[in-house]
Image (tube, rainbow, N blue to C red; front, top):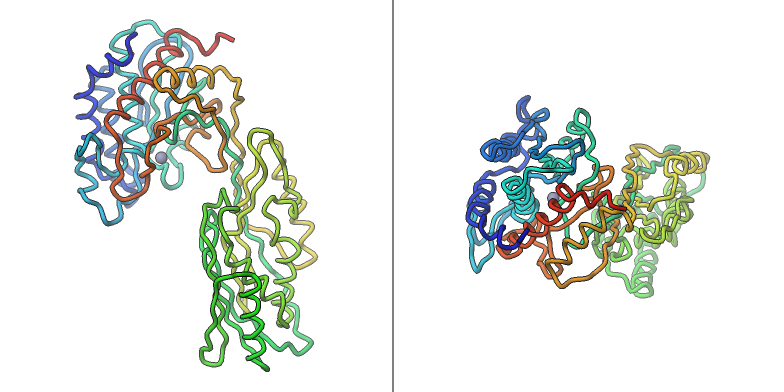
Length: 473
Ligand SMILES: [Zn+2]
């Protein structure tokens, strides 16, 4: 098969169908029975399924949340998993985010990179294959989700009633290929006991606030203190602290209260080492002053279990995997009030090999005597496909046949759509030099890269679904 020329013949049609999809404002909207994620995502799903019907493929809709388009024959299913919902466009666009425009050979529209462009590329790979073949070893199936940007109810509903494909990929990230994703957990560590204050503390910690999301390193932290004596000494020690630690912060006296604030550096929760947790810096200072008892318990606990715990060793959750790396811990929220006590909102990510459920139960038992409990635990287990798996081999070769990039497949701390497939990887559609404009204003995709991704997917489907190369070793 001459993949390149075949794709070129379909170029106009591909661009037209993609344009139709991009024109649908598929931001999550008001939920209804017939459109659980809102009218827009449902309309985009219907649009994709209507293309499948037009092109004489089989289609199925699942609970108005997901669906699939399938062609070919045979027992086995090879899946491509894409999504047609988008994040809100935000402001500052040079074009209308839902009126796709091609400028300098680049398509501008919300969702063109994430994930409508790649999904349409995969759809065309399937369509072209179906137009030119009648014998299949695997049925290619494009699964279309409508809730990837929020709660993944689409894949949840879909796989509840539909068979798990034998293998597949999600074109919702980058080339060459992502074959491992860490387990992702969130949980709250909450201070429960309120010991009575017996001694006379000099400083009462009224409030501490830092961060609002599990998956971000807090970039700022603020504390409100009531200082009973020697306010100027406390201020002096804060200024000394800032200088010694080279920290960015300031203080303010407000109605008799002392307000302290720290600026850190934000980073994604999967790479806490790239940021500076402002809450940690503030806790470190609070540890140096004479606080009331309850706040002292809170700060002491932070010292024992929260600070200097980027690899999870203080939770007994440190684990290293040769390909996937180490456990990482981000504390995305640190809150304390005089009335309710303290809370740490933790986002811990771990590689294959750690028994998280056992470890979290051990941690619960361990911290209970100090008056801390763990609540609201979520856990997405790690996703890993061996680098030597036939799936990785065929996909990687198909990619390399169309580019001069021979970089290796890799693993990440984040999560992609691929983790919902049992034997699945993330494959494209950003290339090595593609500017990542996902979720940003002026989201765009080069027409040339759209066609190139289609070629790569066409070769992949041809080799797996027609030639049966997945089973060769
Ligand atoms: Zn996406």
